[in-house]
Image (cartoon, rainbow, N blue to C red; front, top):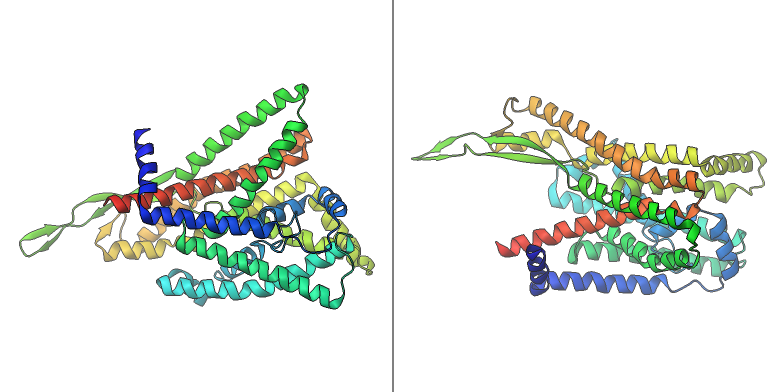
Length: 423
C-alpha cells in the first residue's frame, strides 16, 4: 500500500508524467465534445428504434465512443483506422516487403508502415461513410438528402474519423498508452452512467440473485484477465564468458519473459471489426431490387443473429487473430539472432535454428492458452445471454476485457516511466 501511494505521489510530482496525463485528459475532453455534436436533421425517435432493432450497431458504437448513438460528426469512430490496420497486417503475411518494413527496419520502417495505414484509412472511411448514410436514409433516421447535402455529410464524417485517428496518434506520441485503445476505453467509460441508470431503474427484488451472480462473474473475469495478461513464461538465458584483456565479461544468467497473451486486446478489436463488415454489407443489400442478392443478405443476417453461429464465428476469429497478431509482433528467428550476436544462449539448446525452433514451440504453446482464454471471455456474455435472455449482456464481456486490458497497459507504462525517473 505504501508503495502504491509513493508511486501516485511520484506520478503527480514528475512534471513529464503529469503533463502526459493532462494531455491525454485534454484530448479525451475534445473527443467527448465531438461525440456530442450531431449531424443535422436526425429523427431521434427513429434512431432509437433503429438501435433497438440492430444489435450489432451497438458494437460499432463501441468503436465510435458513443458517437454513433448520437449520429455525431465522429460516428465512424476509429473503425476505418482499425480496418485499414487489419488489412495491412494481413498483407504482411503475403508481401515480404511489408513484413520486412514492419519487423526488421526499426523505427523508420514502422513510421512508413503507419503512414501506409493512414493513407488506407481514407478510402476505407469513404466506403464506410457512404454505407452508413445510405442505410440511415433507408431506415428513416436521416431525411432524403440532396446530392450536395449527402456529399457534405460524407465529408464531415470522414473528416471526423480522420480527426479521431490523429487524436489517437497524438495520445500515443505525447500521452500514455495506445491512442486508439484509449479512445475506445473512453467511449466505454462514458457509457457506464447510462448503463448503470438503466440497471437501477429496471431493478426488481426478484432479480437480486441474477444481479449478484453477474457481480461475482464480473469480479472473477476481471481477476482472470489480470492474471492472464500479467502471466509470463520465463525462458532461461545464459551469457557466455568472454575475456578482454585482463577482465572477464559475461557468465551471467537471466531469463527471456514471454507473455502468455502477447497480443493483448487487439484480437478482440480485430475480430469485432471483421464481424461487422458482412453484417453491414448484408444490411445494406437486404432490400436490394435483385431477388438473389436480397435473399443472400437476409440469409447472412439471420445466420449472424443466431447466437450459436455468431458465438462460434466470434470465438474462432478471436482465436485465429491471437495467433496471427502474435506471429506479426513476435519473430523467434530475429530473437534467436539477437541472442547469438550478444553471446547468449538458452541452456540445452544450440544457438541458431535450434533456438528459433525452441522459441517457436514455446510461443505456440503459451499462445494456445491465451487464445482460448480470450475467445472464452469474448463469447461468455453470449453464453450468459442465451441462458438468461438479457440482451444487454452482449457488449459486457468485450467492453470489460478492453477496459481491464487498457488500464493494465496504462499502469505498466506509468510504472515504466516512474522507474526511468528513479534511475
